[in-house]
Image 1 (cartoon, rainbow, N blue to C red):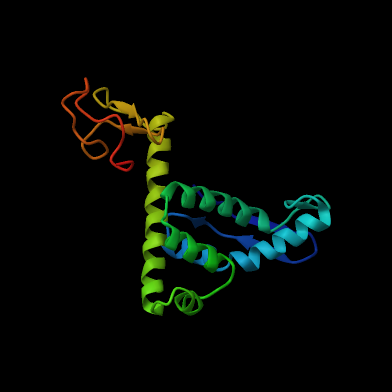
Image 2: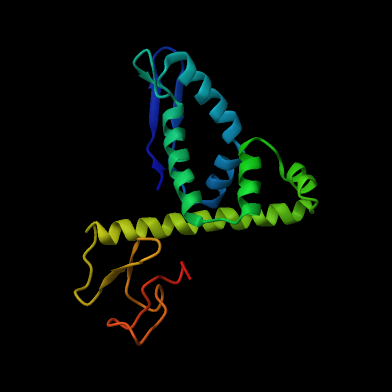
Length: 185
């Protein structure tokens, strides 16, 4: 759910600083997806060289915060349940292809791919925001009003506030809502 704290490495090899990055910013999501092939290539090489992707000679590698961001990003992409075309676009962008290459592969226009990618990044941001809201409310980090109830969806297994925002009405159920959430419909 990604916010990476500032990290410094200053062991006589220069200083690498990572400032706050957040998956609440679609431009960060876009940049992470478009640059994954460059960053993962280094990550894989380091893992092969040391058998540990995070540590080399006891010094944390600068890729650790980026790897954590990618773990969060992968989780969010899975939760978004994108269709096959969207997954194809994401996968190719992560491999280093640009929008024009993908448009050619899909026999589409470059502008169409760019718009779809913007929509994908916006959906990932929305999912991240939903995850944070759920985490903050359910894990007790904020005081939830006594009249606020939560219900577990029978399809996705996530807890959501019992309101018409998340659930379709169904007078046959005791609580007046369907057993599965609107997202799963």
